[in-house]
Amino acid sequence: MADQDVDALLQAPSNDEYPTIDRIPSSYNPLHSFDLAKGDQKHYQQQYGDMYFLRLAKLKPAVEEIAAEAWGEIETAGESIRRVDRVLDVRQGELCWVAGTIYMDMPLKPNILDDISKDHWISAPPPREKYISPSGQDQIMLEDESGRLRLIGTPLQISTVVTGCIMAVMGTENANGDFEIIDMKVPDLPRQPQRWERDEASAVLANGNGKSSKKEQKERREGSKVAIVSGLGISGDEGDTLTLDLLMEYLLGEACGQSTQQEIGNISRLIIAGNSISEGTPLYSRDELSDKKTSKKYGYDSAAYNPAPTQRLDDFLATLLPSIPITMLPGEGDPANISLPQQPIHPAMFPRSRNYSPMPGSTEPGWFDSVTNPWEGDIEGWRMMGNGGQPIDDVFKYVEGEERLNMMENLLRWRCGAPTAPDTLWCYPFQDKDQFVIEECPHVYFVGSQPTFETTVIEGPTGQTVRLIAVPKFKETGEMVLLDIDTLEVESVIFKVFNDS
Picture 1 (cartoon, rainbow, N blue to C red):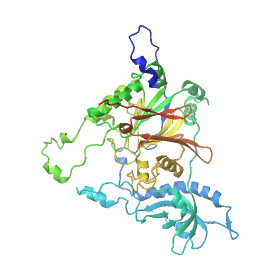
Picture 2 (tube, rainbow, N blue to C red):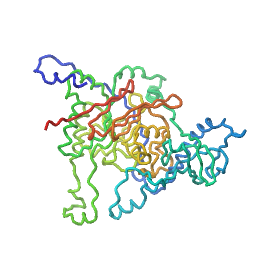
Picture 3 (tube, one colour):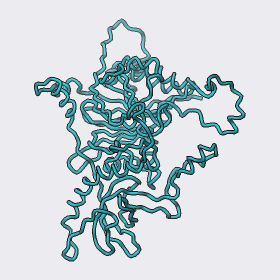
């Protein structure tokens, strides 16, 4: 696209008047599904085990309905397959089915001893790329409030299962007390809202006359695109500024000719999907701390803080914001809480960009919207959901393959945005409701900080269609993703700096 404007950038000055290019406005209606309580209302004294029971209570009716429809008419020896309420009600030699929560008993999974080692300043072992045991010691369990049942069988070898997903399994218990699976079912994709459904309902409530401007919105925003980028990895060094400047100038229309500027004007919003800042200063050991001779004032060590990354990110955002609205999710390396759901990065980190944030107490989103991770909301009427990559990176450790899109599809079909939380993924201990349960199917599901750019479309049992987008790390690949709002087609734009030496 930009190759057509090479000659236009190297031409003599002209007295011709250039047309004014306006950016297409963005219809933006975020949900606040993952906002945590403030101040004293947020605490961590409660147990994490309640999350699994809340998840099972929410998803068990859905998976049982699917299982009953699939297996209800199957008969063996003139008898239909019996449904049992609890895993401990399974009887040896009897063909039956039961629903519960999967638990992966894997010796290589991290345990509490690793955390104790860190607390005592002991050098912890490096993180493992996979939890799978090469000696075959891993076991798959199905559990509920009554107990656990070990699962075996061919379906487990050809399907993806991880700790925390809700499933119904059909089979029989053998002489060893193991449940041999013949078939298995998952909750599958939930109901998917229609485009503009939530915006239209809000407009009806606001107008009070039963009418909305749905048609006008669709006509006005035809041709709109959304840009998604992840893993900027800003460190403040001079080496990471050139590619970032190319991205900034492209989004502003400064690094291209008029034909490309028209295309860029269709980009109505920029989504930054986590890891905008490179990881912070590593934790010093006790010996390293004793050797440090830095002076402290009021307990603050100025040598341990580098303001350059956040300042560079603030400058980057402040340059873009007059032209394009931005939604920014935190990531694993960003200055936010480490446990999911990560809360928005504090406005104090952006002294220049926070001028575009909503006023305190306002319910309307600002031009610059610093949001949670995970996040969901409506953009141009489409339901979008995304995260900074931690749930997929954790599921990756449970399975043998490396198909990230397959993992993303499984998360949606399990109806859980972070199934391995809280087992191996840090999260807030919810007590009343598991916020990671997906109650409405998105139209677009994006995951940031992935190794490569990938995309596909999956379909659900009742006609749902979801566009899956794996967004790569910009610092490593130089790729930005463009989502066409009209067709939900995806393309990538690559920024590279060529070195002639």
